[in-house]
Image 1 (cartoon, helix red, strand yellow):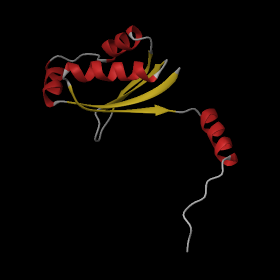
Image 2 (tube, rainbow, N blue to C red; image 1 turned 45 degrees about the vertical axis):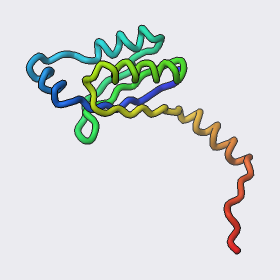
Image 3 (cartoon, helix red, strand yellow; image 1 turned 30 degrees about the vertical axis):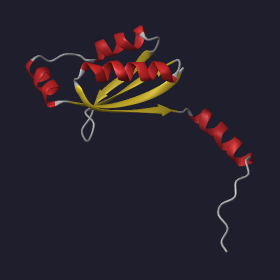
Image 4 (cartoon, one colour; image 1 turned 180 degrees about the horizontal axis):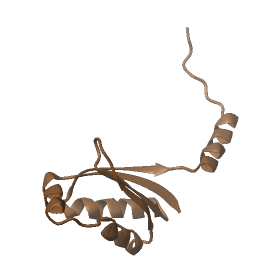
Length: 109
């Protein structure tokens, strides 16, 4: 399964609701991931541009898209960024393939 990092930022209304009634939002995220055939690996909150990240394993990109769309449609996030992550082994294989590929840059005339 592929690993995806999803960074999210809540709306101010969502934060107000969570401050008034604290909830473990990893539970519905886990349920959504499992319903779509994936798995929640980890969930963290953070400082900065995004309020947190989740790591999800999904069998393919359409599952990752479906999860992102379902969360966006609920209306409680104002921003979300999904990044596919690669293992060291996958990246090393890419390096090996790149090393055998020929590509020339622009000429310097």
